[in-house]
Length: 310
Image (cartoon, rainbow, N blue to C red; front, side):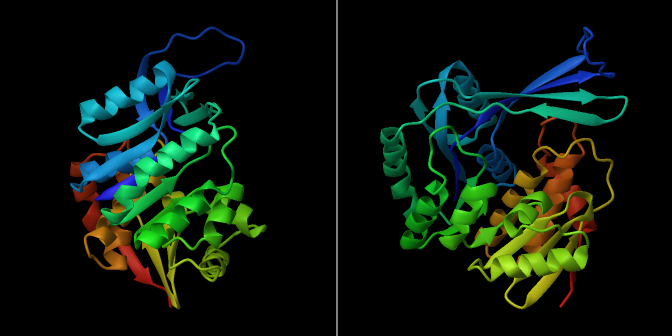
C-alpha cells in the first residue's frame, strides 16, 4: 500500500491551440480536464502500475468535487478532508506549432489549523499499514512550511518510509526530519543548495551533499537527460529511452510512483530507477497533463539504461 498526501491539489485544464498571439481571440481546438497535484498524480500512476494506493489530501468547493469524481471514475481510492474555499484550477496552454506549453498555477484555499489537525488524525492510522508515505507538491495558503517535516516525523515514528517531492522552504525543513527518499528536479536542487548544477559532475556532487543531510536515497531528475541517484557511496545514472516528448507535466510524479512501487515491492534500487524512469518517459509522450499508461511503461521499461558511476 502506497499512501500519498496532497495538501494543495488542483484541477488541470489544458487548452490545445495551433499557436498563440497575445492580445488576440483564439479558438480552442481541444481541451482536457485532469485531477492533479503531485501526490494525486503519484497515486494515479501507482494504481496504473498495479499497487494499492490511497490519495489523502484537502479538497475545497466545486473544483474539489471534480477531483473526487475523476479519481472515483479511474478507480483510485481516496480520502479527502473538505475545507472552505476553492481547490486550485490550473491552466496550461499547449501550442501545437511549437510543442510548447505555458502554465498558470493558482494559489489554492486558505487552510486553518483545525483542518490540519483533523487531516493528521485521519492519516495517522494508515501510517502503520502502508509501505510508503509520499508527500508531494506545494502548500496552500496559511499552511506552515514545517508541515512536511511534521508528517515525516510521524511516519518515521510509525516505521514507515517517506518519499518527499517538494521545493523551497518546505523541502529544506522536510530534509531535516530525514525522509527516506528525496526526488528534486534540477531547479529544486539548485535552489536548495544555492548554486547552479551545470553538468553531471555538479549534479552528482549536489546529490551527495543532499544525501549527507540525512536522506537515504536522493534522485535528481534531469528531464530528457534522465536522473542521478545517490545512496551512501554509490552513484547511478538512469538514462531514459529516446521518445518524442510532448509534455513534461506529471513526468516527475510518475517517476516517484515508479520508484516507490518498486521499492515497496522489494526490488533493488537499480530496478526502481528503471521503473521510475520508464514511468516518467511514458507520461512525457502525452501532451498536456495526461499521465502515461501501464502499457507504455511496460513497453519502455526494457529500453531504460541504469549505469553505476562509482
